[in-house]
Length: 321
Image (cartoon, rainbow, N blue to C red; front, side, top):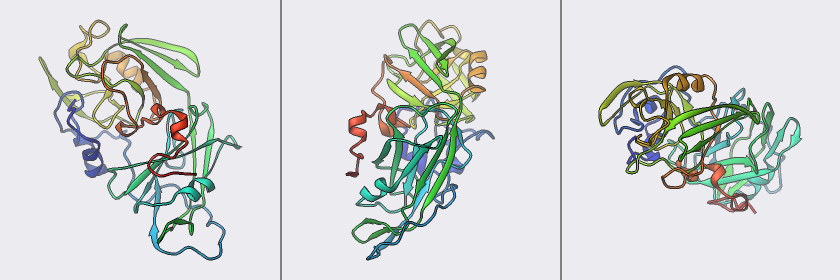
């Protein structure tokens, strides 16, 4: 993993070059994306437009602020997946934006709010994540109405589109990685699914602690390190922008379950890596309570669940109340 790789390099290269941005756990780059790779969409959202917001008097006017969504209609995601919006121009007032957003889970209103943060996504000036206080329920239908077209985005700014979104959650897979026992214990809908040996980051290439969420799957990544080189690492499941993955590590089987010797990734035995790759989905949750690295942050990936709820309710970079 190249610990010097930043989130900005991940986004500014754009979706087409995403597979070649990070060497993950090895400091090398290259490779081509697999067909299963999931990548951020272009600036226009794949979620369908919603109904325009009711007109008000006087009607706000100003420079247009366009909203797009990372999530798409029909997505099936893990219970930790946030709803993510991008803005092509940075709004200065999002109180009304947050107020009119309506999210339901299985038809019932969900309590939550937007949290705004700086972004390096190509074409975006700001991003925001919406989540409830706790993980989404499993096997749930999630609907969002974002009727913001015509609403003020601050002085001299107005939102120019409205959106809706319909997605769902699947099985609630949650992994707990114990850095002392070197095991990953996984539950599925609260029931025991399995325990798998792992090798985490060595002292000089640590694994970040905290809650992480699978961001994408299937990048074809070359990795190298002391005593090994693999041009096509298999069963990669990305956890951070900086290059932490769950992945197969056939070169490290002697240490998996016994010693932490990786360059920051979670090394798995090849058969376990294949099984878990075919099981997990984008949005599944993994907790590293005692890993040896720095704390996971909001901007290091989908680090939303590391933000305390009282802080989340402030709205982050822009106040929502």
